[in-house]
Image 1 (cartoon, rainbow, N blue to C red):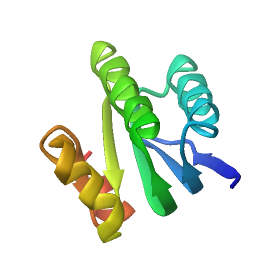
Image 2 (image 1 turned 30 degrees about the vertical axis):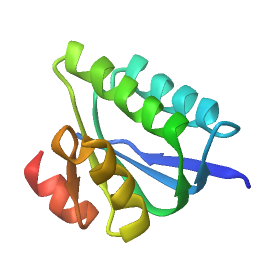
Image 3 (image 1 turned 90 degrees about the vertical axis):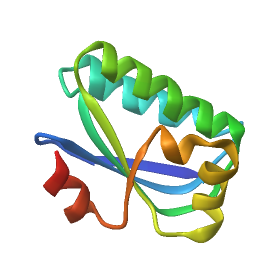
Image 4 (image 1 turned 135 degrees about the vertical axis):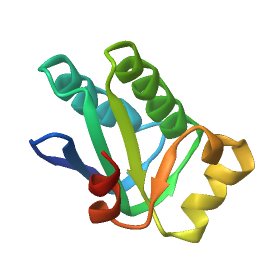
Length: 111
C-alpha cells in the first residue's frame, strides 16, 4: 500500500499521514519528517487518523523523530483515535512516551 504525507506549515506544523506505515513505507515517512525538521520546523503534530496499519518499523521512525525534535527543543504530538493503532502504542508502552490526542485541534491547543 502507498503512503501519502502532506503538511501544513505553521507553529506547530501539522503532518497528515494516509496509508500504511510499514517496512516499505517507513523510509518515506522518515524522509518527509526529517525534511520538515531540518528546514526549521521542530514542532510537529502528526495526524495518524487515516493510517490503516502501523508496524514496528513505523514506530521506530516516530520514536526517532521524537528524539530528534527534543534535541532541538521541539515537540511532537500524535493524533489518533483508531483502536487498532492506539493498541500498538499501548502494548509497547509508547502511549506513555508520546502525547496522543483525539483531534488536531486538541493537539494544537496544547502546543
